[in-house]
Structure formats: structure tokens, C-alpha cells
Figure 1 (spheres, rainbow over the protein chains, first blue to last red):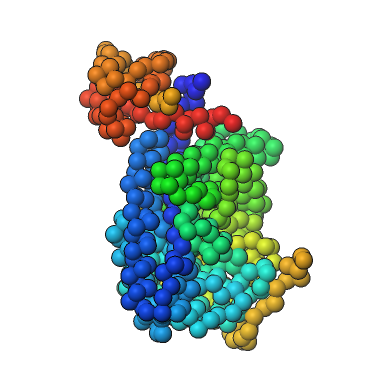
Figure 2 (spheres, rainbow over the protein chains, first blue to last red; figure 1 turned 90 degrees about the vertical axis):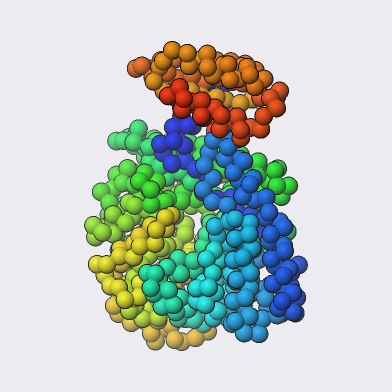
Length: 454
Length: 90
């Protein structure tokens, strides 16, 4: 039987070490909402989301009470909107109406974010894909809760460099249109290589076409728990270090599995996956960078950071895989800058650069995340940064992403403030040399040789 | 039978167990096991209870026990057993 110490350990994790379930994300297929008439698509999309998700928030709150574990977010992901609106939308404005409908539906059911204003263009763009991509700045500016993502490449298809180049412009445009609020719309826009179909985390969540009609995906979180466990093994060797991370990850993931199963049972919707990511927040003691420091680095970004992160990421997965019946999504340590107090500290101290972050993304999920750069960074340079990150994902057969914020009117030394879970970010310097001729070539980069496994 | 774990943590004072048990009895909640220690003047108790007979909604019991804890000056948490079982047992 459970004893006093075990109960105390769990409650200590919740009360003092920020153990929580980061998100219950309900994936909803909108494929049955496709229609050639735009008004009908909008109506069907609203009806489907509000009927499938009507009990989501209530259920999340009930589970929170039952187990005494905070469930921070309840969210929705939908089928990539470029597919749903393709038959009806003739202009950018047509697509924006769909974004507004998503926003209204999300508000009606009480979720704080809805993902899936997305296009999957890893090999080529359809007319609808391109229209949706071009409508992103306007769509994000006119909605509160909508998140957008674009898949630009994959190991199987290579990298769509036309789309990469276009996204350089779109990210800049998104920043400019929201310049008066520190270019904050860019937080809701992410580009991917090898985007997973079942990611529960925003801004990149969408409900892939390979998924069932509705599915429950859960993202857990526990950087604070891992950090605290590691304080007890200071000075011990790598074997002890790795075992400690693994055991802790197991415990954290079990909570996610329990919540996912309970949500699935209560809502009558199948359980999809648990995402094993260590997701930080700006709260003190909820930082992935602090774990790296506990492992033995003065700051995240010091020599040894990539190795420490590789080790952390791998042990989290090894512990988590056994704790859950189905694992998916991004599953790794997140290294966003603005959402992690330790990362912000490392950038401010000059320990962490964009290039080091890029190296770190080779060994963890997900990519260059929540990074503020000067507002006058050329569009082609943004496209170049994206291309580099996509190449890492493509060659290493892993998901990589870029969520970057060109802070309009600001430069290195200043910072952007987003508030709440999004935190703030010091503006990081970008390599000033041009890649214009490279990104303007057009076409696509072929898939790497090791993708031909048939 | 689904079990529930009630934990009470806080500064020791007269009548903590009495008041918690009275609440449970009033609400048809059966106590299956109690373990309790005092560490450096801090009262630490765990109860395993059966909530199957109570007519109250689980969320309401959680809220009322929390409120009772505030009155006594301790922290009372009420959680379904599964969260501990899942975390500490393979």
C-alpha cells in the first residue's frame, strides 16, 4: 500500500517543484467540414469544434480536482486549415474568415489557444497552401487564440526552399503588423521540419490527417522536479546522474498517462499520446537551463552544454517511454529562450548565442524557440536561419522548428515583453553576413541519401 | 473499491484528527487506514478513505476539506489514490 513518504514526495513535487500537466490538447478532425461554399465551411467548422470540445475545460477542471494536480492548459488542435479551406477560399481574406471562426469556437468552449491554422508544404505548395501562408499575418493579427504552423521540409521530401524564402517574408510581416505590442503575433507562428501529427504543444499543434476523428494528447512538464532530484546527487558520476533523471522522468510521465486516460474516459474520446517533453515556464524553478546548471555548467551555453542537453533529453525519453503506453508528439527537452528564466539569464550574461542554440537543437526538441532578434534583420537572413534549422531536422531525422520574433524598432541590448507563460526575451545578435543569393535560388533541397530506405 | 488519500500537514494543535474525522463521519466517508507522525512540531497525517458511500460530489469534498484546513490552520488535500499508485508502483 502507498505510504506516507510516497504521498509526501508526490505532493512536494506538485507544491514546490512545479509539477503539472502542461496541456490536455483535444485534436479534432475537420475533414468532414470541407465544402465549396465558404459560409458553410465556417458554419461546419464552428459546429464541429464547439460540439466535440464542449466538455473539454470542465473535464480538465474535474481531473485537476480529483488528483490534486494542476492542469495548466486545455487546448484544441484541428486539421491543417489549408486542406479544409482549399475548396472554398479564393483569397487571403477568405482564409482569414476561417481563422476568425476558429477563434470564436475556441472562445465559446473556453480554451486559451487553438492550433491548426497550418499548411503542410514540405515538398510543394498548392494554391490554397500559398494563400493560407500569405494570410497568416492578417489571421494572427485579427484573432486572440489562433496558432499557426507551416511544415517546410522533411527527411523524406527534402526542404521546400520556395516556402522557406516566403516564410522569411511572412514572419517579418507578422512582426510588423503587431509592432506596437512587441511583435507578439510571432509567438503564435512556428515553422517545422518533420512536424509531428500529434503534437499537443502550441504554437505548433495541429491534428494530422493520419489521426482519428478526435483524440486526446497530453503534454506533461517537470523541469523543476528533475532539477530538485539532481540536487541530491551533486558530484556523483554520470551513471548516477542518468539513473536519477530516468527515474524522475518516469514518475512525471506516469502522471501524464493517468490524466490522459482519465480525460479519454470522461470525454469518451480515444487517448492518443503522451508527449514527454520537459517544458519550462518563466516561473522560478521551472527551467530547463537550471537543470543544465545543476548537471555542472555555470550557465546554459557554456562548453559542455550540447553534451549535457543530449544526455538529459535521452534519459527523459528512456524514463518516459516505459511510463506511457503511447508516446509521441515532440518528446524531448524544450529550450525556448523567453519562456525559461535560466535561458534568459544565460543570454543576458553573454553565455548563450544563437549559434550555440542551433547546436543544442541538434540533440533535443525542438528548435530555435521564442528567440527575439533585431527588427531590422533582413527577411533573407530569417529565411537562412530557418533553412539551417530545417537542414538539421532533415539530416538527423528529427523534428526541428523555428519560432523567432523580429522585434520591430528594437535592437540588441533591448528586450521584448510578452507576459504570462510567454515571459520576456533579450534581443540576440544575428550574424550580419548575407545569405541572400542562397535563399533566392528557388526550388527545393533534395531529400538526403539516408532517407531512401525502401 | 476506489480509494482516496487525505493528507493533513501543518502546525500541531489539539483536535486536528477529531475535526477531520467528524467531517468524514458526517459525510459517510469510511476511514480505512491512518498513519501519522510529528516532525519538528509539524503534524503530518495520511488517511486512506473510501468515498463510495458519500452523496457529495468529489470536487465538493475537496473544497470543503480545504476550507476546514484553513479553519484549523493546516493544509488538507484530498486526492484519488491512483496518482500515487501510478507514480510509485510499476
